[in-house]
Length: 315
Length: 315
Image 1 (cartoon, each protein chain N blue to C red):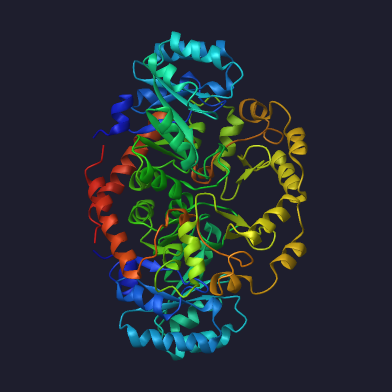
Image 2 (image 1 turned 30 degrees about the horizontal axis):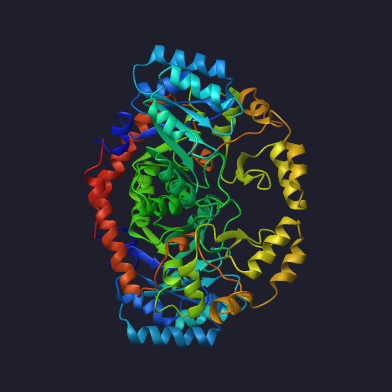
């Protein structure tokens, strides 16, 4: 079976691995692409030369399509985009910025562009910018998120009703059941973050992977709302954030508490208590570290079971 | 097609109307039951004699099964339960309390009991209490909600994995697409609140119905977290709540701000600005006032379309 997204990106399954900071290097992206999904390198935690190295390594180990996720607020954005074009990367996912600035330039260089949003207002801006696909990310997703707090269940059908662009659902999706739900809601594909953050090939620290596996219901919360809303995993740093929230601290106080480099400290260097650990709500259901191929095969198999079950369940 | 829930309650479609305060009187409950769903009276906003009158009126206009939703913290709970048993109501949905206290007594009187929860911990307590069904309500739902903030997308598969009791999904469900998503996630049925709050037969004030129709993305937020987390619709009262949240007000200050009778003032008496307006995130997609029968027919038809589309979309 093929659909708008599998055709657009020339992939077998409509499963895209989120281009997450500190997790999404060449090993993860190539493993996902080799297993029939779309792997993405996460430029958000890479210096330009590091990104170039990861692109080159990915090309060596897979002949399948892969892409790069680029937060548009990145300080070295011009250099990043130059490398992507020079290295002939075919697919770019942009986030955290205005899709109008880069979309056309990338497309003129033969690149397919998807942009990540969390509300219908920005979905419409994506359409104006002429993107090839939209990633709509619900409240339950890890890391940075929208201020409207709209969940995947509410966001996807709303965007689907308004626009006709290929649509990728993100947030709360780590299983074939959730993949089927997203497609029922009107998505053409899913982007999976947390489950791949805990994959064998993920480049984050093993301490972080073990924390994802151990995470229980209610262990993540959308926090730091006075800065940029971010879903964090419960640890000592997060408890400090909660204390600040209860006492009504100012944005400046939050910025000082956060400081610099906390995400790297937690996710890449494995400081379980003082690091900033970005992960989705679905971590409560992740109970093992699997390879990217195992994750994709399991999701596709479960998705097919759900479709078979539902085919016999109409009224 | 039948399933565990349609068989348990002897209904045609696995669509249950939430027993919402100030909305769910005999007109709404009977209209839903007559259309093939399960209508519920909302005892949470009724004095015992008013509830008795609504039960008797409902029985006069429908021969189909219907039920009563009872918040267990209700002050006149003994009298409420006595009336329900005397009037031979067949189905009770309990919420906001311990399911162990009433479940067996109701079942001994031939009543099927469902209990509403928002996390896996209480789902397990429901199993221990021997309930006949569980309603699992996600973060996007209107009114009172869980502290874990788990969305429907994450909550339903988690509970389904742990327990085998008939499962009803709630939160974010007002369309056939969302109904299909809930069933893909592992639910046997859906409970629909907001969409029926805005139904023609809903007993809330027309001002409130018009506000639901006008509500846009981001217009509801889970608020009053220092008291009991409650999803509210944006108005002057809600803006005061937000101001209190930003400045870190205490639980006592929130309780004083809330005062008594605000939900009645907003939802039943139609005070658009000073009333407390409880509604779900899905209100952003509700754009018309329909009859209960139109809502159910539209949901079933859309659900069947989704199933037909997905039957041709496996990998």
